[in-house]
Length: 247
Image 1: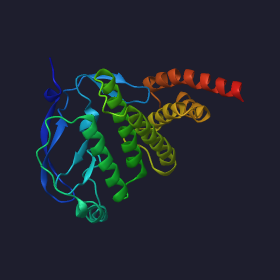
Image 2: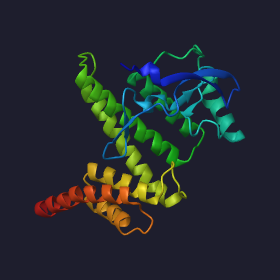
Image 3: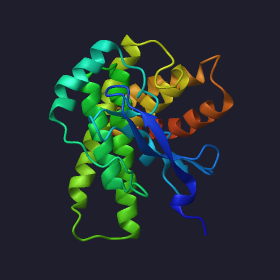
């Protein structure tokens, strides 16, 4: 029986801010078996949730970011992190834990979000981080359904999940008007689908309808994303009908 530890290893990372080297638990390339994705593109894997391991967090200076953003800092951004985070950060052990649980992963992503705000990162980085924090809360709640823990306040976790989901949605709507594609590795069709899914969740069906229409009329959208948009369209149409009925 495979275990989570079978899919991770310790990678040596050089911190972009303080230039010290630390160990970070990382997913082994090519080791994961994908099981599909949620309606909002959250990927699911067998045996291990790769999302928990996406943030690098320096134990010496506190600089944290998702791996895709960790290295690319300007001199000004490094100074902002040193002045506003490192100066107040207490060093911790540079020995990474054997595995990362959801509580720890959420804290690391929140630290990454704080770093992105401090270093004045692009809004897309902050939006993407918020989205993944919400996904982590979702996974944590799912884990608690399988392994109940009465000491955990599930209502608070649910509220936090929704709050970060909303932040991601509102930020991404602004991002598409201010940044060039690709955004967070997504092309225009993938971003339209993500926004349509988020809009459906928040019952903004008119916005979702426009985003879905963009995909279905696109000359560049592949069959996979068009099929997903068609599935989502059913929920959008149903939502619009209910809005009309209640008007």
